[in-house]
Each structure stands twice: as structure tokens, then as C-alpha cells.
Length: 135
Image (tube, rainbow, N blue to C red; front, side, top):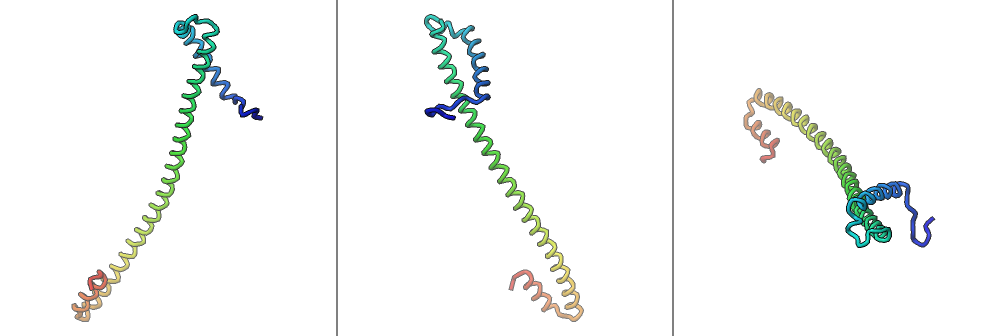
């Protein structure tokens, strides 16, 4: 249940904050306390909220980039599938065309042989032109 627009943290978010808290504690001990006037608990609390805000902002950017990457990957997969389907169709058409060309060539050769037997070189030339589309 969301109260007043505030949503509770998920377990993953709480786990991430625990990691950030450990990183913050190490940073505070090593250098953070020396960068704040006083370096006490009061200053540490302000530093923690600034640290947390920065880490959450970075995480939001990372999450956004991951979502964009996932979207791009899904688009790529979809386009590749379409491309593969179209490629298969084109290959099928090409194979059918090659088969038809073999049949036309065989029919033409039979026709040529028949016309030659009858001495019809003129008709053979006209037939070849018609088949090539040169009329």
C-alpha cells in the first residue's frame, strides 16, 4: 500500500542500500569525516543522505540504460527474425526461378532441335528473341 505517494522499498532496494551503507561507512572512516567541519554524527548524517542520493541517481541511470539495452536487443531479435523469414522467401523464389530457367532452357533446346530438323533457322532466331524479350 502506498501512503501519500511514498512507496516502500523492495527487498532488492534494501539490500542495495545495505551495500551502499557499507561503502559509505568505509569512505567516511577513510576520508569523509575529514572533509566535513566537525566530522561528527551530525555531519555524517548529512553526508549519508547526499551519498545515498548520488548512488540512487547513478542506479537510476544504470537501470534506464539496461532497459534501453533490453529494448534494443528485443528490437534486434525481432528484426533478425523478419530478415531471416524474408531471406528464406527470397531463397525459395530464387530456387524456383533457377528451376524454371532449367525447364525453359530444356524446352528451348528441344524446340531448337525440332526446328533444325525441319530447316527453320529463321523461326529459331525469332523464338530465341521472343524468349529473351527482344521482339
